[in-house]
Amino acid sequence: MADAWKFEVELRADPAADEVREAILAAPGFGQAFTDHMVLANWTADSGWHNPRVTPFAPLKVSPAAAVLHYAQEIFEGLKAFRHADGSVWAFRPQDNAARFTGSARRLALPVLPEEEFVASLQALVSVDERWVPTGGESSLYLRPYMMATEAGLSVRPSREVLYGVLASPAGPYFQSGVKPVSIWLSTRYTRASPGGTGEAKTGGNYAASLVAQAEALANGCEQVVFLDAVERRWLEEIGSMLLFFVHKDGHIVTPELSGTILAGITRASVLELAADLGHKVEERRMSIDEWREGVAGGEITEVFACGTAAAITPIGRLVWDGGDQVIGDHDVNEGIGPVTAEIRRTLLDLQYGRTEDTRSWLTRLA
Ligand SMILES: *Cc1c(COP(=O)(O)O)cnc(C)c1O
Image (tube, rainbow, N blue to C red; front, side):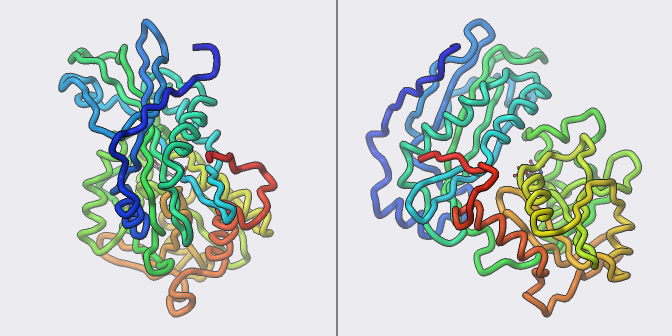
């Protein structure tokens, strides 16, 4: 298909009643409820991409021998659609999600989806399900593009049949009762990714491998887990689905460099630019777990935060490890969100919700 895709639309006969949808939008939570429709498109080695469509949200029919179910040949993306005050709906840097989806596809031996069709698929779905985009607060419509290997057969090789899809799920504010700092568990037993592996790709297998470490974090009273590098077990990598930032006493900000084993977060890239706008010197470099602990103990590091699409920016209030823990910053102030973290968070959200001018053209209109 050389021309722009035409998404056929099949509207569902039984959309959610207004009261049902409004009840969901009043308290959507995260990833629980889905809109009336979804996007699907098929790819085969013989015919390439075909049949892009918006179709009623429904279970998929796949063979129990589908490659994805056995060998995890799968990738995904995650981004949000934000409703602005004038009612319009916008995505934040969706072209960057499209480019990352291409990188993930190449690493997982999946076909490349044309990047303009990735964005067009979001527009196709959100224009049909526009009523599902919440209004107010820090709510949004979370969009989940994915691609998976559907060919039936147990040979280990790239699938010759693939399905692309997009789900949309209304999302409430990540922090229900105001932004609160989280506690982070230092995983020394498990790693998330290794050089040459799939750490840089957004693929389900990385998440499957992190669940046991995440369970260890919960068992130790923490919300999230931080991973170290797999070789020296010393360098900071990332928090399951968020990237780390360290604010120093003199205002400069350090984030672990993209090592090939951490995910190139779009929120991370945005924070680097916005923090520089706000006058902070920003540095991407290797940083060890000892530098974290010593920096906080000596007062050199004053704030730690993590960032990703789901929560935007999350302050980190405590690091816990096997045998000890350490509180970061002054928890009686601002309930633990430091002034620099708060300012960067507000700057990012003001841009996403259209309250400040989008000077970098980071927003793309979806509906
Ligand atoms: C998606 C993801 C992130 C966050 O990236 P954003 O583009 O900022 O949402 C961080 N780490 C992992 C492992 C991820 O999958």
